[in-house]
Length: 165
Image (cartoon, rainbow, N blue to C red):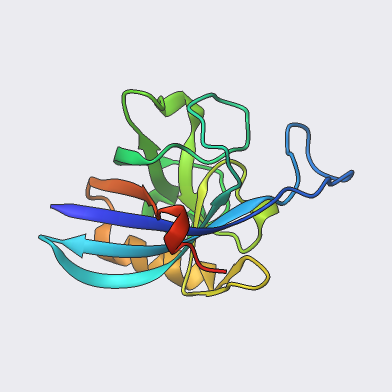
């Protein structure tokens, strides 16, 4: 079984962005450690960046999805990074509480403002600034390994007493 496991570890609050697109709340973001597993063996590690909390199942909130297990299918997309993936497809994340229509994708981006409610991947992170780096390389690696195969995403919160500063 293929699983992308994300362990969130640090959240940065929203700051108002008067130039943001309609519906965008600012640059609030959540950093995480990401592990790609095949049959319980880690095959690739990177960092994740998601919108700030609180987590929600509601659409059009530009907030991260709740902790839990999600299905993933590859679907055509115009979202950032699709040109680096065969057939212009990106992973679409969903489960019984977060519908496909919410359009949570895994795509390229380095900053909170890039998340657009989705999950970003990068090879490294700046834990002080709350950004990720080398996102294109991380998305390319994911696609090389797993496109067009289905996989699961497991998102975990780290207990407050274990969160990094």
